Image (cartoon, rainbow, N blue to C red; front, side):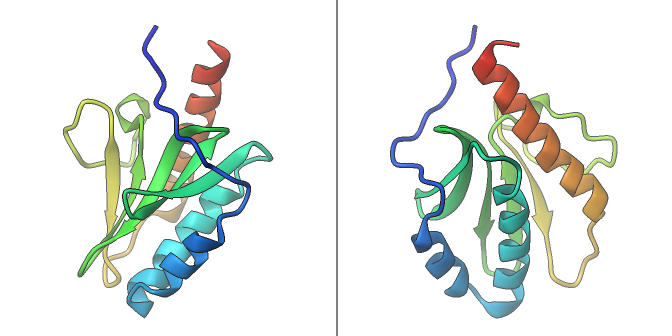
Length: 132
């Protein structure tokens, strides 16, 4: 069985994340806030924290997704993105586990497909935690 990454200090709502989101460039920050809000809404067991300078959502203390804002794009990322079914082909990255979806303000995204990835990442981490 693979070890599960855990973070201390996750809480139901971390106000520092709201501050972080408000400090991003408006066009990118609004998109990041939208997707982070969608992640927060997954379940009563979702917790959040700032780690390494960007917002992360967890199932309890086990991270499943994050947002990060860069100069001209933002990433919606998944800690075990390697395990997610991605029929729309949104995921990028070649790391051992992590994958991300790169969003640019002028480029449309398949909202339903990204929403499905968030659902799948949340469900995947819940299953890993229960050993299912």
